[in-house]
Image (cartoon, rainbow, N blue to C red):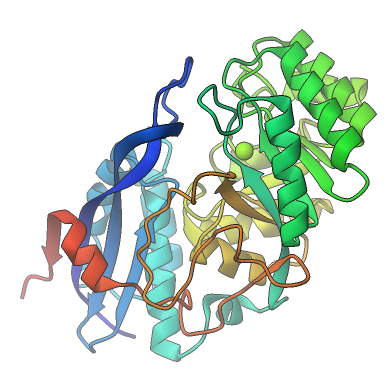
Length: 393
Ligand SMILES: [Mg+2]
């Protein structure tokens, strides 16, 4: 038992070159823009105990301003409490954020797991129960753009070929934000024709198609092209179990839904209603490693596979402790852009096109906690705001 002494939430900013919102219908997304530059903000959670142990996590895909507000709402609970009480925190915060989406809960839970792993000298996956040391990765593309990167069907098929040449055995693309069903279906068919014999292919509609009819039309293209899964097709925002049950009955390609369905209970209800074939879980989005493992075990009880959304050290640790999962999402990659996640590791950890081994796999770090070493020189140099919560004597 170690009592938490202090928690710091550190906001930081960094710049990315050749990026911008320079294409139509970009809504809240960004993409390739030659010569452009954008500033990105993320945050780190650092937990220190009275015995000198320390847990850290740099929030990645879910590190938005609304998530930060939730994180700040929760971390004040930690000082003075036993750092082992992850399940108690999970349930306390589940109630605390009951009117919200819980997106700020994950980063704190992940930092607590990193802390626990470091306290006992084991990786998080080893603490939970390790199943694997590595997992096949799929290259998960940036969305299509109109700016000179993934701006045509040929650009996508060329990129799939490039990923195959690099050693990937699976490839997922996000289409264009425009959500034009005819264009999306043509791209899916072209990828199937050009690369379907060498790559396992997946399509993520990212809820961009407009109507159920669009989703059905594009789903039939997935059938024709032999896609492995069809993810979050259209603008119900991928939360209607009724509609996806109906879609499943009309196409052959397995559906991967529930990335946008928040909470263990709602995901379970979605499965019970027949709305998906594969289940989604993400340690940042789904209330931490605690929540993601609950989701994985719930899916296991149904005999279903859970596919871990996005990438990062926490995501790898979850994949390392789960049997019923197939791939690691190496997101987001493109022929002219690196991953937009912060280069905040001092040990060479990264999620880039070159991060796979000769089998097309990424490794599960086996060092204590998350198994990564953060680059505090870089993080401190980019820090913008520090929120400090200390134990009162
Ligand atoms: Mg997705």
